[in-house]
Amino acid sequence: MKQGRQKQKSNAHERSIAAIFTKAFYEDGDGEFRRTPMSGGWDKRAAPGDLIPLKFMASQSAQSETGMNAVLDAAFPFSIECKNWKDVKHFFTGLYSAESDIFNWMQQSISDAAPSGKTPVVVFKLYRSENVVLIQARDFNKLREYFGLFPGAVYGATKGGLEGMAVIFIMLKDFIEWIDWGFYKLQGKARYIRSIVKSDDAPDKAEG
Image (tube, rainbow, N blue to C red; front, top):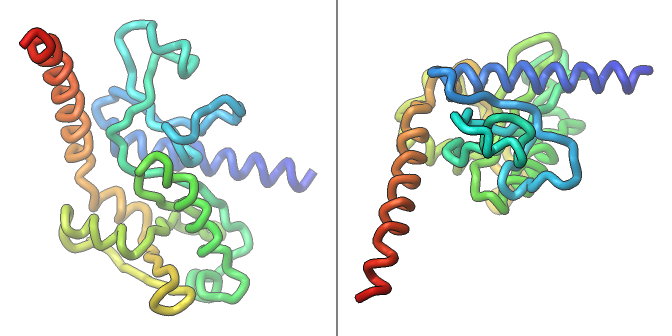
């Protein structure tokens, strides 16, 4: 019974995070995030993590892949793992305790994201508190090159010394505000346009 209630809480947490990313990335209403289907036939290489970005289509041709009038949106750059950390009652003592699972969570996200090339992040909720983003320090620094100084508090932790893993904790609400989501959507459109140009040029090259 307890496991059933915990599963319901985890599912609710994933849906709430999906709604947050939908509002940020699809502010024009042209798509949405949903929980990743549990079907064994789902290709995790194309859509790793617990949430999938779906772009709405005008035609019905995409229904065979997703079961809805939408296709996977390759423009979204992150692989999102969701965790509901029910036992943490204090931010610092929980995150930095010897029993913390944060590095296992980060490693799971890294492994899941690797085949897709997306940036792994973990979003977890502290005990009756804020949602927190967990990201590798090197990925966080790359994002700072694009989007500048982070607008909120930044916390860090390491495991294994200089050769180990360094991670950053930031509030999800600050992360959402910080990222210029339109930047990635424009990048996605540019890749699509380049693919059309290349396909149009191919016959000319063959004839020559």
